[in-house]
Image (cartoon, rainbow, N blue to C red; front, side):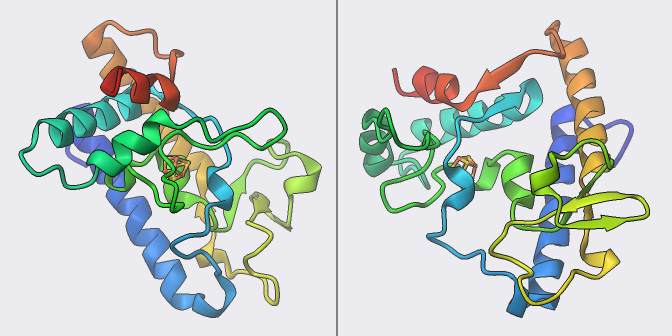
Length: 198
Ligand code: SF4
């Protein structure tokens, strides 16, 4: 990433790197990864994101709403946004998950959504015990329980999630300094949805 690029441009470059890593692992470990279109197990959540991620999503929402032919967020999305899918006893459902279990902001989905399903390495004391699937010298690994059921991932198939989080934090800090925002501030996807579709 260039030191001269804007934080948002560097953030987009980071998402591209994570996507490339995910694509490579998916290709190498196709028989062990059950992630597919329509599986929305990772999307039963009310996410909050950092300010730089929120800016990327908000820009996408503005652009797609302004376009003559919205590429992703058309009438179907708007209708879905108006529906409250979560019930009192159901898991929360991401506000950007369509009725057909597709991500309505897929091109700009948060980093955490891009790495879900992959083997993720964190410091040993970071993960709840129940989430640990593997211990390696450099930390603990968590994986979706539907993936790597028959085999353990190779070290080069494990994403250093702590490192990705650190880079995201640095880019968010740069972005927040430029815009006078508290870097600790989190933005809910629900708030982003509501501001785009009041
Ligand atoms: S932003 Fe998209 S991928 Fe992420 S939780 Fe919501 S619907 Fe799922």
